[in-house]
Amino acid sequence: MNANELKALDLAHIWHPCTQMKDHENVPLIPIKKANGMYLYDFDNAKYMDCVSSWWVNLFGHCNEYIANAIKSQADELAHIILAGFSHEQIITLSQRLCTLLGGRFSKCFYADNGSSAIEVALKMSFHYHLNLGQKRDRFLSLSNSYHGETLGALSVGDVALYKRTYEPLLLDCLITPVPIANTQESVSDFENANFHKELESLEHILTAQGKHICAFILEPLIQCAGNMNMYSAKFIDEAIRLCRAFGVQIIFDEIAVGFGRSGTLFAMEQCKEKPDFVCLSKGITGGFLPLSVVVTNDEIYNAFYAEYETQRAFLHSHSYTGNALACAAANAVLDIFEKDNIIEKNRILSAYIAKEFESLKQFTFLGNFRQKGMIYAFDILSQKRARAGLWVFQKALQKGLLLRPLGHTIYFMPPYIVSYDEVRYVKESLEAIFREF
Image (cartoon, rainbow, N blue to C red; front, side):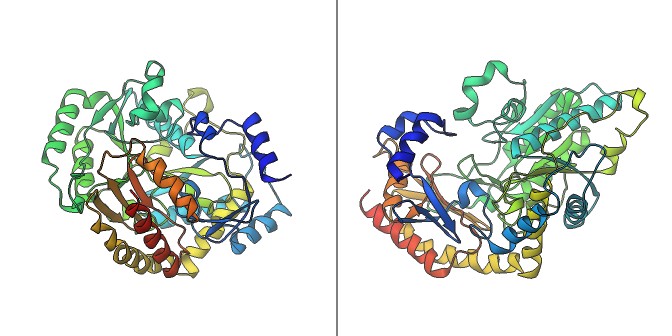
């Protein structure tokens, strides 16, 4: 079939995610035929540089040979088995490696197959932990502007109205405390040194009033990705955790988007002095090949469920493809690449180069709040000249062979870690040309 035939069939049968389908009357759908490295290729052989890592999942380029071969080899041996009562070598190896890399008290892994499901697991696990200890805690606390997924529990603890407002009647009654947000009118965001006393006062007020009812405080450490790439200080996180600890409130780190090197360290929690009780991981864990997620926790949590079956203390949660062997093989290959190729140090150098190149975009006075954390660079369109400025940039970028998918008026660059200096320079030059037309 040619591209037009595929588009017609697609629009006849596929309801795309996070999309107003009517937009495709004016914004053409692009069927992709193949992908390799940094690039996607359509059926007319036009190529698009993947500047958003295909929704933040791709770490080492499309069709990475090492990861692909690991999956192929595993497929010849074992594709999938039920994880209840059975296990396999890939998941055992992966679990041991993750616990070692996270360090500290982390010792137990519970698997699911997407980020939202991992959040659901962590929320249920925290509630059930307190229940098993005879504590009646039934509320959750999260940050303003946060996003944790779109299943009902995950949506409940999020705070992005675009996704949440419609479903409010169905959601849990959760508590929201303000997150530090940089002044978007400034040219450069100084989020690392922002004052957060008012935010801590608000948190302390909530904890004083409701602390004994709260199971856990959930947050995306350092970067609220879907919240317009809001970046905030690890110092705030440390102080917030200390306050929560005083009230017996557990801590859940949602590292679904920021884990596996995005924040500049393998895990964002490495930049915080205070550590969580649960870490949720997904997206980059398989390098963009297969769905997989995991909640990593500690023996204290685990032991609260460890009892005779008749006590009804077991954590009875499951997904059909939990711990899929192919996905675990991909994840082990991803960890291999981090280790053998010294990725974190290479990314430190690469992220500095990105910052240097993108400096020239500050010439445009209608752009502001330039910010960077690790391998995520973002800025905002401050001008109200165009009602849907992000969509306009998206379309202009496609014409230049770039896949950029802005968040409203926020433009961000979050590429696979294999992006070259020449490619970074091309993105910068293309954005300059686009904004000259703005």
